[in-house]
Image (cartoon, rainbow, N blue to C red; front, side, top):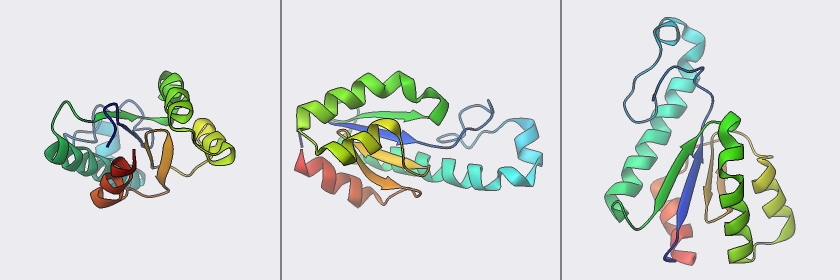
Length: 131
């Protein structure tokens, strides 16, 4: 693992419903509307992954950022830095940078590890070990 490892978890928008990923909280409307079930499920899985990474690596070894797609511009410079620092191939790097992947997506050190699903923690650990 590199000394500056990062994991970015991109999850679906929760429509301003609060922090649903780790706490299980959700806005009152979303709690009553059954169409939010898949968002709740994905958010809970993202929270599970976040907690499992923290349990394995602690607070200081891995930076974990959870965002919604609308907030992606916030981490774009971080993704660019990771892509150039790790010399990733061009096409996968562009896909990662532009988030041309299904949500939820998990990006480790600038490389998309999973798209359209939340991976098992072992997949993330394996990629962190390559850094």
